[in-house]
Structures are given as C-alpha cells and as structure tokens.
Image 1 (spheres, rainbow, N blue to C red):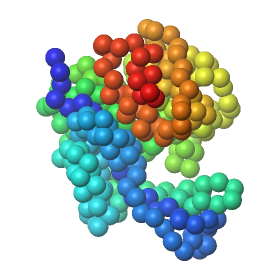
Image 2 (spheres, rainbow, N blue to C red):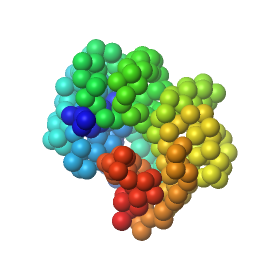
Image 3 (cartoon, rainbow, N blue to C red):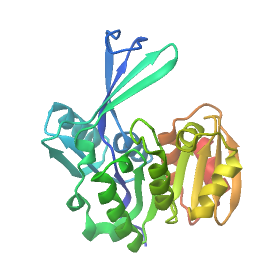
Length: 278
C-alpha cells in the first residue's frame, strides 16, 4: 500500500557562509555568500524537486537564521512540522576557498539538540524512507534520538538510508564513528558515500568492490558509491554490482534523491541507477 510520506529526513540543518573570493582565513575574506545547508536542507530540497513528499525533523535557533531556514524548507514544499526552534543558536558553517582547496569550520548549536517528541510516531507506518547522515550521528543527543527513531522506523517497515558524510572535524574519534556508522548501516540500510567520505572514515583508499562488499557484509541492503564523482556504483544484497558513468558531475544529494525516487519494487538496481543519469 502506498505511504503518504515519501521521506522523513532528519539531521543537521544549518546556515553556510561561503567565501565568494579566495581566502585562507576569515580575516582575508571580504565577501560571503549565505546559503541553507545541511542534510535536511540540501537533500530535502533535492527530494522535493523529484516530486516526493518530504517531512523534515531538525532543530534551529530562535533567531533570524533559524527563521530563514524554516522559510527555505517551506518554500521548497517540505513539511516543517518536525522543525523546532530552541534557545541555542542556529548551527553555522564557514567555508573558505583557498589555493589549497576548501577549508571548513562548523559552529555547532541547535542542530544537535533533537528531541524524540519531534518525530511523528503515530505516522511512522505512513513513511516510505527514513533518512539521516553521519554528520547528524556525530554527537548526542541527536545521535541517541535518531537511533531510537530509526528503531521505530524498522518496526514500521520503513526503508532506512544513510549519507555517510563523515568528517573528522565533527567526529574526531574515528574508531567510535566506524562502530556507530557500521552498526547503523547493518540494519538493512541503503548507504551512500563518495571516495572522499570513505577515505575520511577509513584512512585509506579502496576499490569500489571492496567498499560495496564491506557494507553488504555487515548487513546493508544497498550501497551507492562514487569514487571520483564521475562514476556511480550500486551494490545490492540481492542483485550484485552495477556501475554507470556520468555525463557531467552531479552532487551527492541530487544523485541520492534521484535514486530514492525510483520505484524499488518495479525496477532493477541497474535500471534505477541508469534512470538517475539519463
């Protein structure tokens, strides 16, 4: 039976300030571009563009930035009844583009203060996908609350997915991160990650086949992996491994949203993967 909520997306919701010119430090920057960021904003909007019904669960501050983020989600057609505003300031991300690449600083605030009451427990049977990120699982109480909600999602036979966007600056204890994320992924989860995500989490490069086998072996249902942003691999516990080359680079959230929008029951992993890039 069809479910009325396509995706419950929970995790970090923050405001990013990105330097418009090259700068190695905040003192060198003269102009910043403000944009909604975090899994809930970026993936949520990408899912909504796929005509999916998205319910967001996150926390922002009772400040102007928190209001802007709520407005952004609502304008994108996302249900914001699970977004709470707290006395903590809205989480900020500062991104500086320099000659040696991008440098990011995150100022954690309200995003980690999730509460279990924000989740629509009475409606879990109406949810198709339950999605979160490594960023959101990096700190308590958000980690504890999301894991508890995920257990409820399993009991309601929701499909579970995880964006493995691990970053050491957010989660310095790599061994703990590996343990938590592997445990979460083991629950028939669809895992999505890039080569950079894998390198950050494991400290070494691996072949796509090794990455796929790692997560399938611990119990994941599907694995989406892009080693270079030019090719996407899909590994399925039921249908093996397939890959497609992209005509142009596609950001992870857009690709994941396109894949999640494909009817799983009616199409093979190969067909679903190809439908995203064609």
